[in-house]
Image 1 (tube, rainbow, N blue to C red):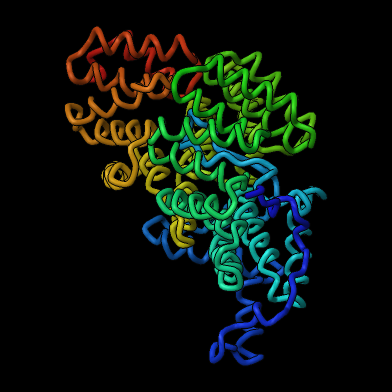
Image 2 (image 1 turned 120 degrees about the horizontal axis):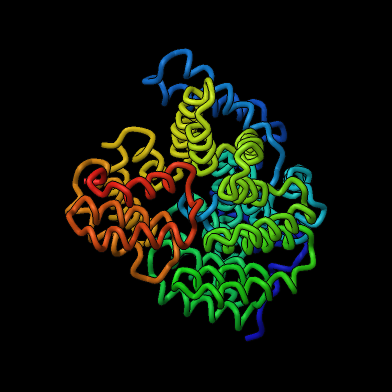
Length: 506
């Protein structure tokens, strides 16, 4: 069977309206019902009402906050949601690694103009006149997933769900829509469903780039690293390119094979042709260098990413982290403020709060609390739109929120998936709640694959000291600081303090 090429077809290509496309007898809705259903799935062109609703959901979820703080946080979140459609991903060292994504996440035709919002508006108009075009429904669903990711606005996920369901109602074996369902499930952190849908899509089209990539993502995020490596081999053989290369590199990095990861990313950068892909891969190389404490190289790659796209937020975020680690705190604060003003994800919000705490100027403690409160706001918004945010909750709340809630969330996430990130989050949540003996096996498991992550080593060392393993604890803390001496605005200084006074960790 020859490979299918649906991924490369124009996004708005109409389909026929022969008898095979018509609903079964007795299932045809009335004209009014059909119009309502289409409008619901297509969505509105304007986003103002959605943002107001999003803020109201945040406010309802956050009534435990002080009134003045709640108003301020809701206002900040509302402003943040008006940012442009600029791609971003949370840094791996400061937040759970999101599903890898690039400008190839939706059809090249849709993103070729560089304006995702305009592409979505065009698709919406097309589908109002051609409501049986299942290919465009699938593309619209994928576009909504991408829009949610690039704007940090989870309220787009329900719209993506409706559009993809519509595509599958019209064509149940549509591999593009099945791959879209996989991408949506992954974006909502439902990785079991993501794997199921990716496998279904690949059964229809073994060469679907989206499905191949989603399958790697799902296996990685389920902690099935050996299978993820095999999936990456398969994807590389069937559909080599930037989206596959970047995932292949991350699988290598999780194994501790930093050199191999770098070579794969350099290959990806050499083959990147669009500005979006150049920015994306350069930022990944910058992140890899930053994780190893090579700030000069990290800043060089982040600079290359920003030369391709001056507004590329992962590069802006990474540059701010590298500046902070290099001692340029003023530039780091300014840069991170820009990031969170456009895209208030938990990772950058926590980073900015810690930068304020580390600076310690007048009013900085209050500013830091505002950032941590916004993390709660984002989590409430994400959960309201079907996103599993337990890992985000555990990581942020353990250091800057409700410690009991951090442990609840970390335990819940560990039931779902056994990754190095969930092991680390559970270990740290257990530690801050005083359960160090229970935490130790998880802390050691987080570093067992060879993944070189200074935050994991810091958490492990702190827990080892707290359980009386002084030699191991000092070795782990020393390794963390040797690997990446500026891995965290607060964590790095605490690691140094614990090495000077091990009793403080007990």
